[in-house]
Image (cartoon, rainbow, N blue to C red; front, side, top):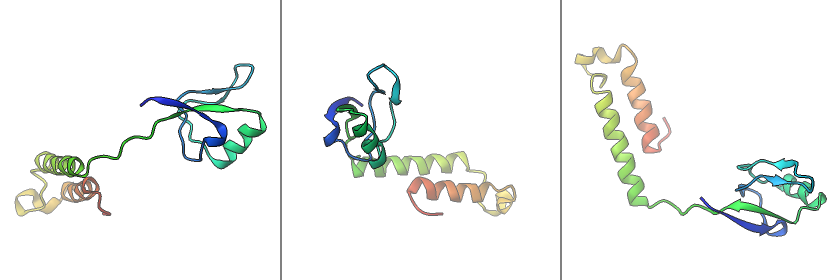
Length: 113
C-alpha cells in the first residue's frame, strides 16, 4: 500500500499512518501503522502538527473472488481433516478433530460458530 500526504484538518479517525509521525526535533510522536483517533488528532493539532502521511484505502475485494477463496479454503480443510469427519470410521470425532473441523469451516465461511 502506498501513502498519501494529507493536511491534519483533512485526516479522520480510523486512518492509518503510512510513515512515522515526527516532531520538530525528530522524536517519534506516532509510529508507522498507528491508527488515528479523534483524541490523537486533537493532541496532534495542539502540538502544531500540520500534516501526516496515511495509507491509501484498499479497494473492496471482489465478492466473486472472495466466494471462490472461501470455497477453496473449505475444500482444503475437508482434505486436511478427511479422517476426522465425525463418522463411525473416525470414531465420531473422539479426538476433537470433527469439532475443530466444524469450527474452522464456519470461520472460513464467515459464519458464527
